[in-house]
Length: 328
Image (tube, rainbow, N blue to C red; front, side, top):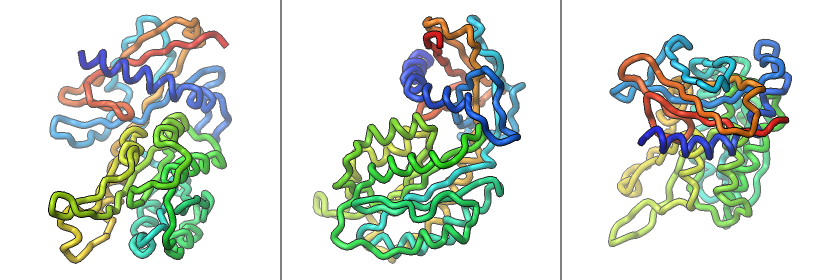
């Protein structure tokens, strides 16, 4: 039953992201990342864990079992960890967040420095509108200026417009198979200005293979006679959970009554650990499979007690995938 549910979910996820992934497979990329000629590559970031919920390192293609009766695939691409990233910080400059975010500059840039020198970084700032303060660069010092800005006063906030613009910023980069495209969005979670819907921003991110890690610096409000975290706009948390990233809430209901600590070092470390514990799973698709018929294949993990998740879907030892495309 679980596999049937996962299959139904993956069908929707796959059909949404297929066009961008297919185009990606046909592009020329860096010399060490050249894809096979006349093939299509479907790529999925996956998380693998053991029975205790801990990441599992060191797996190879020999630890995978592929069942493909229709001969849909011609090969598997499987790469451990994340060495090369394109990392964009989307910073909410409305209200009182300026000082908090500015204090986190060194911790944020330290996260970037722990990836390979082939990685790149950018900074986008937003309130009612968005601006790319630092275009993608490999120069950490150039990115520092993006964390210095004046706080916006009495401004409205367009989080989902900023999310869409963040995804569009990656268009300036060449397509590289093993590169992960990551947005770390830091905000209080209240959107009162966006023209872009949350669903549209999420779907575009999935299509373009961009994962959001959302850091929520909450506001508080009285509720039932006590202070409570003010609920973020609908879709704010899902922006992380549905694009393959993670959501982090800083503080809780007790935070306004305590000396406030906004040190995000542990969160940045958690993001690094999560990225480096992931694998990149890909399937090379045979041209003969483009026959306008539904083809189903599955991939399982051999080691006992180990399971994996695909995108926003749950963990299982085996997942099914579907391919259904007409001839070119």
